[in-house]
Length: 174
Image 1: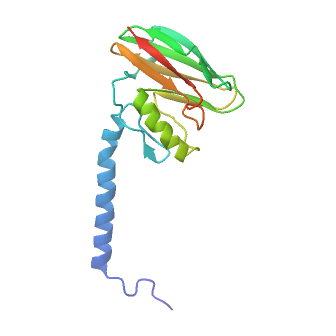
Image 2: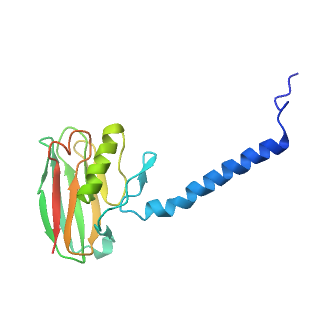
Image 3: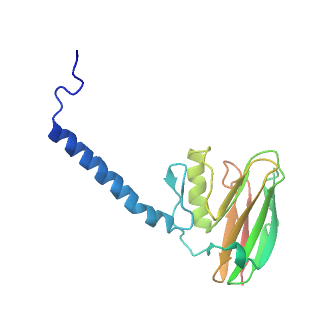
């Protein structure tokens, strides 16, 4: 009978387990840092931290207005320009009226462009963060977002080819 543990020292095994545990602890220790960004983590990597403040996930009980957004295979959002007031919590009812997958992701221009580049490398990635909704053809979803300061918040579809084709818009926060 062959001993599967022959040649393996207990001390070496414990050292490897300790190193592995330390690595896991270090990774878990970064989770709050990643989650503190505007996007969170998905599909095995973290979305970049927001380079500009875009607001925060909103509470359904505090929604002051609902805005319907339609996504189409013409690579457009309707409406593509939205105005809200600083401090307002908005529910976006998002509908994919196209025949292919689309998504709506809120972020700064820089963050959307950077993440779009990642999406080109990993086209199967799906977004399930508070600032995003990814929808199959004919499906509906929601984003509830609090716009806490004046400025501009961009949104776009980061599916490969869509953002580059002009599938983007902006929220003007007054």
